[in-house]
Length: 265
Image (cartoon, rainbow, N blue to C red; front, side, top):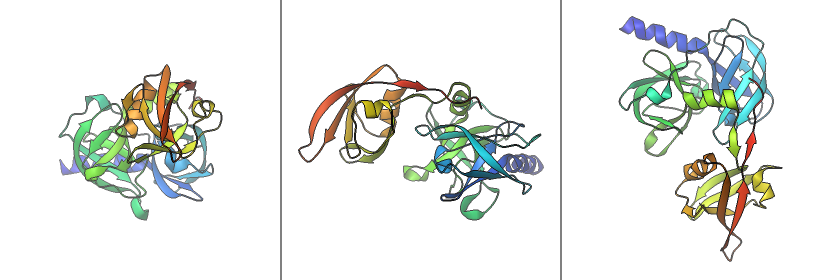
């Protein structure tokens, strides 16, 4: 069993890369296919100049083929060939209590490995009790057989790690980012504070502004940012209620969600 685990860990390390940018330092990524397709978190590659270092020390400039800031997924392409691609697993088949393995490059430690157990699984997140640190973002979360079932993304309340499910990654690579509103939000006491509005997005068309506080969609109050994501995923017309200015008056707007297609990755 120890030997089997060692082989699984070594395969995962070889399929894990460092993703480096000039301003945000280093994160992690996963070799998704042998022809140089890399997946990572969108927040890791927010600066547009990106390079990827493989397990054997080779360094390649990377092209950002597609990204989805809302789901925090990005697809990169490098010129490498016959690369040690990871095996993708079925995140929907995961069950609480299963053993998982996280590999990444936290705090400059290349190929660091940690283990834990799954706490919960949803279409949005795999929650697991594994230790993550800066630099783990975008690295693989795998089952005991080494199949990647998520991309490590962040630590949530209670010190649980959150990973984007592998099935969501596969859907992103096949279909693109899907419906979007075009805002970046931060939870506050009264709702979701808008900290960025994307140009030419449905949010800009609806005249949402930096500093607005989103309160509800279709009459349902937001308890967290995931509630907004779920409303966006439903598609169609999104009736938003938000607060603006010191008088805190509310008004509703109808936002038609569009489809942002990703480039073929």
